[in-house]
Image 1 (cartoon, rainbow, N blue to C red):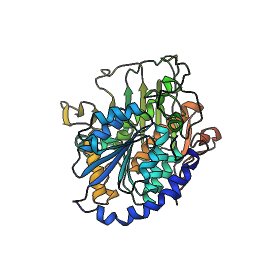
Image 2: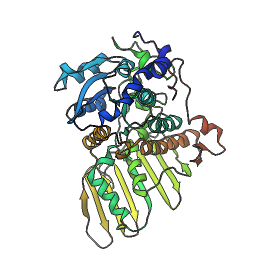
Image 3: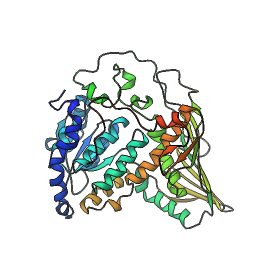
Length: 428
């Protein structure tokens, strides 16, 4: 373990790091100057984290200074793919990055259970944050992220990059202009084949890996390969299943197109029809979200492949005048009595990252395409679907209080217990 022990996390992420926060905030007017370089670090170096490292390295007015992962192999793999690895320092412990006064922005691309703790600590430390989806492991964490971004006046971009895709923005505007008529329902579709992972025995962590830090706020559990790279998605202690992993993209677009925020009721029957292995999360979910005047339906099947029903993973909006579809091949509309028409392309990660850097340079959180307020709303849908599946019943949701009405079992899953020494940083 590093010299900054896990028992000192609160001190380091809170009061200790605040020493640099005042300096960073005091220089915000300087950072706003267009000629100023934004100095960036990436925390978490799986496939998406490596994408962040390579992507931010190439953005004008952005300099990649640091990368971080508890696995030395992931750090080495990332450095080998960079154009200028000699300019990038590697770390095992993200807390050392937060202590650096010369770093302005960070990406959080860790497993889900670390997203909010790191993002919160970073904003307390005066950093702007690009946090991967879902922004939070539970609803209470998401509330705190929204509060922190507002309190510290930081740009906090969410990894729902479809919001920066021009074709999708055009499709949403098409509906806003009334060209699809009244839209009363939208479907968010996540159907794909994710192979079974089998049963993995308990074993020692790989050499050089700081597994205790990887576990972080989660309960102590022996290492297994199925709780490791990528497969952690399928365990409730670390992930949110494929609903939070991939389904959040489709639900975010559906919610955006319908123009709604939080549901008043959620019903999400689901379970495992395909897996007989170490998976804890479902392979099948059918969730219905009730809003005033419209419904959002989410379908997840992890045992079927993309080319089904005439479309791939994506969305279908049902209006009085026709149907609008958004998928990996772009956006298409079919109006009654007219041929199908292409509206534009799909999501754009590069544009989302550039938008983040531009807003940091301008000191303009309001200009973010995927602000944390929207990320939290979409993550809430994912969490409520999972909670409904886990408790086995329909939920009535009070969006003002962010709690399930009259359901103690469901409300227990709105937050989590944190392992001693890894409690959430406190906003001060």
